[in-house]
Image (cartoon, rainbow, N blue to C red; front, top):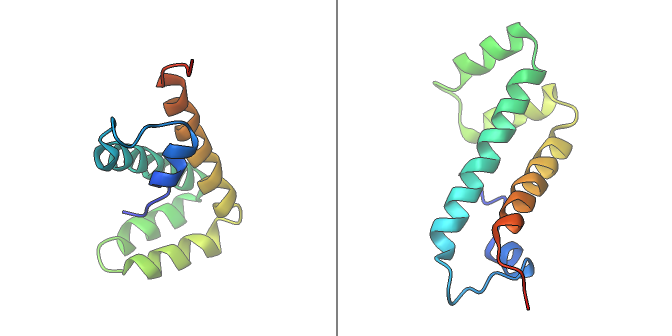
Length: 99
């Protein structure tokens, strides 16, 4: 799994690394980002490309899959950033207000 959200991302939101299980939080947030990205990518592909991607997932390396996706999803980087922002925004809403 790729680290879309890092410890620095959380600290910049005001998360106290001494009182938060950062590893578990990062894993949960990155899984959410990855799921959202995957859903958005699949919905943007033609049915033929979606079938090809599904078939490739059995045999292709992560690098080959990434290259294939980048070639077929022109706004891939925007999709990634948008979903990082969404997950960070949702997480920020759960944080206690700083006093």
